Image (cartoon, rainbow, N blue to C red; front, side):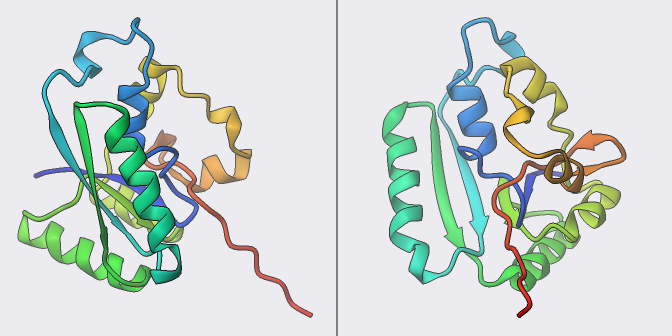
Amino acid sequence: MKKFFSKSGLLCAAGLLAGSLLSAAPKSVPAKYAVNAPIEIVWWHALENQYADLVNEVVDNFNKSQDKITVKAEYIGNYAAVNQALVAAQAAGSGLPAVVVANTPYVAQYGASGLCEDLTPYIKATGFDLNDFGEGMIKASSYNKKQVSLPFLISTQVMY
């Protein structure tokens, strides 16, 4: 079964994870993590129309910055729609994206179902600094002490 890198609604786009971690990695990265042939990474997200220009700009800039990884951003709908699409793709055994922005509460569910890949070896191999994120955000994006996602954004609820 194909696995994806989850990025919960506090998740992962920190440069589109696999792409940015590996393409921007120092020369000392072990060969088994190097991207040696062109690949396409499908990125499902829930970033609505008001973010379309920014999403397109970030993806275009990343794609132009190197020649090995092409990111294809796909707006799926709100976080519930993303979750439904992931569950359906996992059940079908095909159609899973490489990267997803999903809502944080789903991280444990995805981790328990085996849907996520442990990012720890990639993080260690590339020297990616998890200290850029708060401890709570890192814990919320892990499962069974495995880093199965990275923080992307956080929404703060305010009552007045």
